[in-house]
Length: 301
Image (cartoon, rainbow, N blue to C red; front, side, top):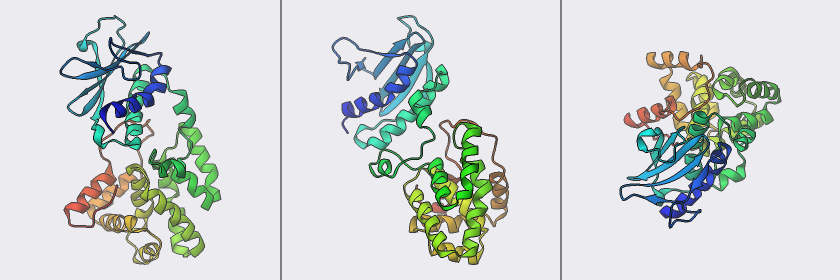
């Protein structure tokens, strides 16, 4: 995408969150509402204003930075703004899926700072990601989708899945899959070919087209529970896709080391639930890096 096209799509994606907070775009002289860009020579920015203050998206050096303030004065300068998230905005390399990801990051910042959840996001937060959305590149599968799809294979998980959503207001995958991973491990032990095929069709599809978080839940939290058992791994290998097989083997081997056993103990006792925010690379990402550094086959995101 060219910069202007990417910017327009980004601003359109941010509109629900900004409108919910009462913000309207500030259109500088000579600009249009579709592209309300201010260029001061050193940086470019788009500004929104409302009763709660001002919000700016600042573009410089292929980065976009969120600035926000609760100061309502018309001439609030840059020193009055707090700095929110900052991320790459390389227009030539952005696609629709990445634009949506950027919007999600900044929407969470704005909602947290101003305290009002976007109704559209709240209503759709717990709806599983559709195959059509993934195929179009607009979204990736998430933990909620994985759990929802697995309830088709394991009807007894429907009630615990609903209870998890009701308890936290959104799906908390770490707790759910720590508790119910043994259900899948038991299927591998029993060698029920029909059920194994059904379950691994789900795991393979979501791993190949999912976020790094859900990939970690599949490879680490669920299939890491095979404990490097040769018989279990041999059965699972028959059904795992190529992208999933190498990470699962490596993780099972790692969990047999002293460091891996300590890490497993922490993973089996997930921390208290907290609403998700932008975060540093998690355990699964670290494992991928470790695998690559030791000459193991690379593990895809």
